[in-house]
Image (cartoon, rainbow, N blue to C red; front, side, top):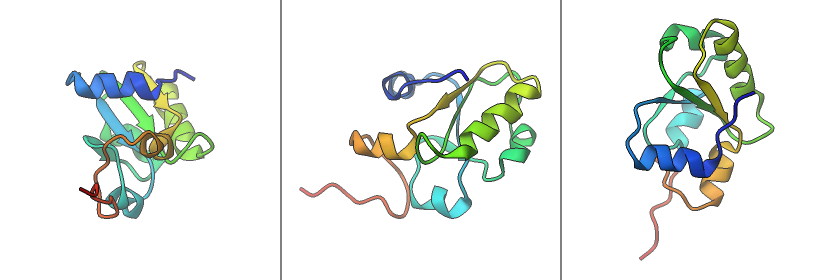
Length: 111
């Protein structure tokens, strides 16, 4: 499985690289919290319907043990998508590092 680290992902986002960042959790989880710029595909079996094989794609879910991003990665790579990476740390690692999130449950920093 082709992985991307938190620091690599942050660098791609900061530099404005052209790629699809895909959260593979449910719609309500996406609405609660997600990495800015993310798309939501809440059914990993349908991930190939929403993305193009020529896209550069980074898949993530909640944390390293979450199977949704693993399954979506497998769906994509077995269907001819060649430029796919998985951010294994997911929302949990991103939030733990204090990196920006969007969503209805994201707390505003205290001043």
